[in-house]
Structure formats: structure tokens, C-alpha cells
Length: 227
Image (cartoon, rainbow, N blue to C red):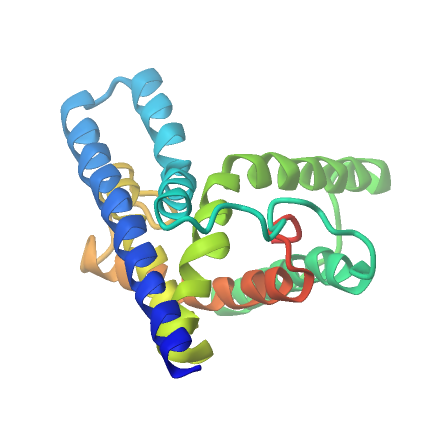
């Protein structure tokens, strides 16, 4: 039994090393591309979209090399018996978004208002557009979920336990955002004090907290689809 546990940890170390190695290669390539492309928005967008799917590439390569494959069915929806999980997958980001909006309004001193310019019809249309945008965002970030939640977090849990996986996985996920944070100023811009280190720190904090519910619904369902 002890030997089986040791073998599992060895495979986990191998998977993590392969996965992170491939992600690092893409980080360096994306940094080089951003530095070289400059203001070429079309090429910058194309390279960024490729970069978004680099965790998926790392996951596929690591699972194939270690022989793990995808026999666990983690890529399939698994709707049966997982209604609660899919409900949480809808409610968690909704609640987090509302709380984030309220907190931002309070911190910025703008106050809270339910008034919508254009009336109720425009308000409903805006909500529908935001709902549609969620699916677009889910598509372009699918490459991330197919990496972090399909491989990295699970392997880190084997090596460092649940809490260690959440913290280390969140930090690694945040650091992976370095190229767009530094070169494109995503999320925080570039004109804040302590650029880019403060932005990277905030990103690591955000990804650590965001990664927890994403991993929760992944573990509850045995599928990456809810995440």
C-alpha cells in the first residue's frame, strides 16, 4: 500500500513537472511575442488566444506521457446526479459578481443604485448580453480549465494536500498571467504604483480565491465542464 502511494506521488511529480515546463515555455514565447510585436493588435490577439490554450496543451502532453490518459471521463459533462453541482456552477459566479460589484461601489464611494438607463427593457437586454458574454468567456478560458483543474490541482493535492493545492495552484495560475499583465496591462492597467509587481500579487490573490470554487465543482462532479 505504501509503495502504491509512493508511485502515485512519483507520477504526480512527473505530471506537474511536464505540465509546468510546457506552461513556462509558452510564458517565455508569449513574452517574446509581446515584446517583438509591439502595437500589432491582430497578431498580438492571435498569439494571446493561442497562449490561453497552453495549459490544455500541457495537460494533454503530461497525461499522455505518464500514461494517465483521459479514461476517467473528466472531459464529459456527467449530468446524472450532478444537478446540485451545475446549479452551484451557475450561482457561485453570479453571487461573486454581485458581491464584487457591491464592494467596488462601496469602496469607490459611488453608492448603490438599481436604476437602469433606458428602463426595464434595456436592463433585461443588458442582463441577456452579460449572460451571453459568460459563454464566450467560458469558451476562451476553456484552455485554462483543461489545464489547471484537469491536472495541476489534482496532482498538487496528492503532493501537498487540499489546502496546499489551493494555495500553490492559485499562485502558479496567477504567475502564468505575467505576460498579459506586464505587456498588455490586463485587469489593472499599467499606471498604478508598484507596476507590475502589485498587479501580479493581486492576480495571485484573485486566482487563489477563484480557483477554490472552480475546483470544488470539478471535484463534486468528476467533470471539468461545470468549472
